[in-house]
Length: 114
Image 1 (cartoon, rainbow, N blue to C red):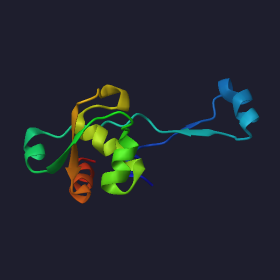
Image 2: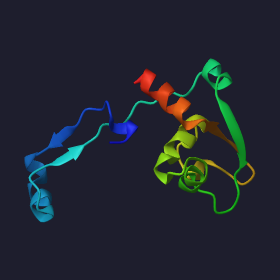
Image 3: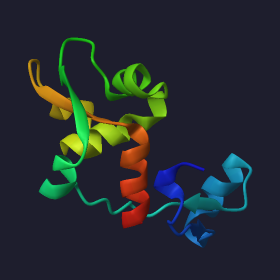
Image 4: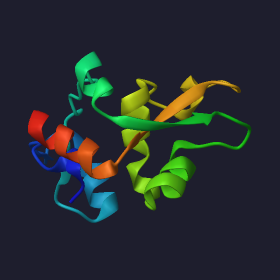
């Protein structure tokens, strides 16, 4: 289970309103995860984290950067979170992104905030 879902509650949707949709999908219910509440790093936390600079260029995607720097494209959200730019489309050519390192330190920070 990813860190994004570790401490989040699950809402099980079996509402009558969705009866036909559930039937079409061949399921009795759908599990939903509420929107995660993530707080951006404070100035003190940023000062304590090393980061690499990356200039946003044509063809860049958070998932590609996460694969390049962390070896896992599913960790794209770490870069988005750290830079306070939630999607690829929040970046423009020439923007400098900061890639927080080491990944273990970032994950520990996120777990402590839980």
